[in-house]
Figure 1 (cartoon, rainbow, N blue to C red):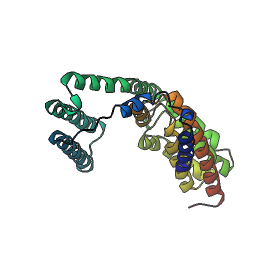
Figure 2 (cartoon, rainbow, N blue to C red; figure 1 turned 90 degrees about the vertical axis):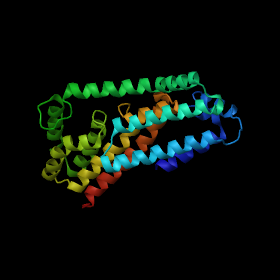
Figure 3 (cartoon, rainbow, N blue to C red; figure 1 turned 120 degrees about the vertical axis):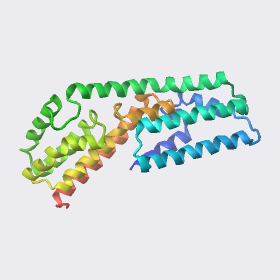
Figure 4 (cartoon, rainbow, N blue to C red; figure 1 turned 45 degrees about the vertical axis):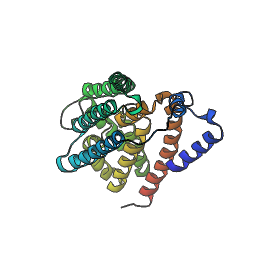
Length: 265
């Protein structure tokens, strides 16, 4: 469905670029394409590629062997950016100077400030309502318990659908898949047993609810970082992403209800 939606949208934009939701913000990239200058591939360019490849391999090794996460990965990419910038200055790649290097870094940081603040505020909201700890009394856990009791009186197929809806909404507050599973599954799994929802269907509802809603939630760090790098305004993305999420949610609903009715194991 995602491929089909993307291909249809891309086909429309190819026929008429003005139909693109990001036609105005794409001006930056169009101007960059117009400024492309051909020049020979030098030793400095090879060094840049070598550093880039080396860091990618280093990061993959660190993630696999030492379980690196965001702080470690970010530090590697920051160091790589500085080293590549200095190589550009030394070999004068594309007219690179120390001032241009500093300006480029500042511009990149400026694009990421708004997404970083938004994700930070979202984390602050989570801390206020309970910090996502399953074993501690909190507003969040009280809400979870109340919703679970509300679902318990429904038909099993409808209960399965409400589990999907609940997971999709709850994902706004806890975007971490493992964190959401730790909070909700201890409640929903036994609740599913009580109302006749198969545990595999409960897991299926969790996977669909946790996965697809990331494409429009501003609390998703990966989404906001990607939009920032691509210079896409969140409001413009929402107009496109909401349509896709609507289609995916309808498909997910059909699959979850169908799985419950067919006795999916």
